[in-house]
Amino acid sequence: MIEEMDTLTIAILSILVGIGLLYLLMKLAISRSVSKVKKPPVEIKEDMVQCFSCGHVVPAEKALEKKGRYFCGLKKGERGEFKES
Image 1 (cartoon, helix red, strand yellow):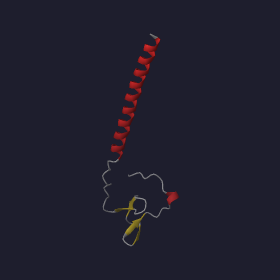
Image 2 (cartoon, one colour; image 1 turned 120 degrees about the vertical axis):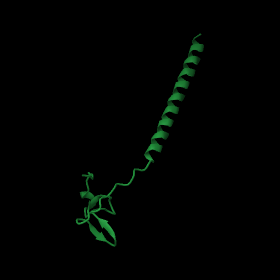
Image 3 (tube, helix red, strand yellow; image 1 turned 90 degrees about the vertical axis):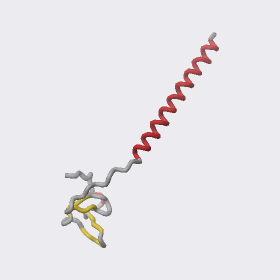
Image 4 (cartoon, one colour; image 1 turned 180 degrees about the horizontal axis):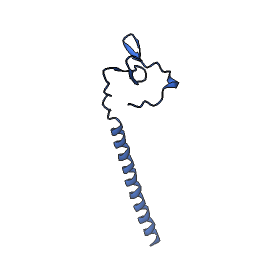
């Protein structure tokens, strides 16, 4: 009787572990597919330009222009989180 209970317990635990692994794999697959969805590009106002190097949107009159590309003028360490106003 003890051996039957041990076998039953192992079988139930194995099934639960299998279900848990399937759940985790499905959750991982879903999160990867959601993260691959690209966000639409930021709508830029006419007098604003996007920095070629970091992507910040800055007023055209404050941007530096070189070879048709615009730059915000901030060094990498000076760049903070960009907050759109």
